[in-house]
Image: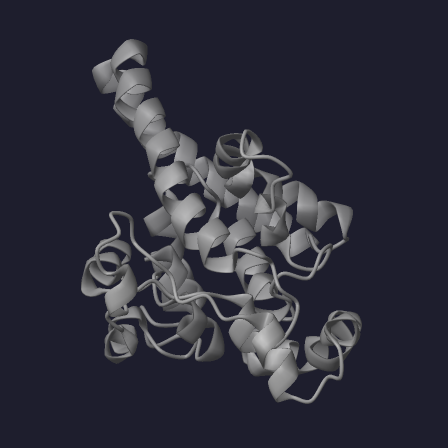
Length: 250
């Protein structure tokens, strides 16, 4: 719900989408303010270091992945603050976000007690973090290409991943057409090719950036690597969620 709210799909007005987004994230103890601002930047500057807040998930080793997945929504504030993207109005909104979060969970705590509260929520929040960020943020941007818009994100094959993730599995198309709600991404679901259908784990249709470089006429792979960011960074930022950046100035 929060993701759909950021993209303006939950209500008819900007205010309605903001309120639905705030309510949706109360159970996970994440302020909608941080998610709203960073997710728009993620779309505008996908995979570009120091400009994409979600590049935080590009781990140096496999052992970092669970730690970064758990820390992901809480590092957004510090990322924004460091880059001067937190305004006074954002601080007020954050205070209200946290008030709602603590009030809601405080009431639950008063009824069930600390032990039940901890064991009922802590393991679930960790599981949700891992099931969300690893398959639908790390794996859907594997390689962290800064080449063409199509090569920066990957889709999962099959209906199971589409329904399991409520559309997040169609990640490339979501980045290319952010105005589409998750249910409108259903026509873009593709079945896995025959050679990988028997694999146990869900598979992605990763775009080969080197193949794309040959198509656009690069003479060597070294030239392609050198020119990808310069050739495509501006195009990617414009094609993705530029309308969202302009609408709220992040």
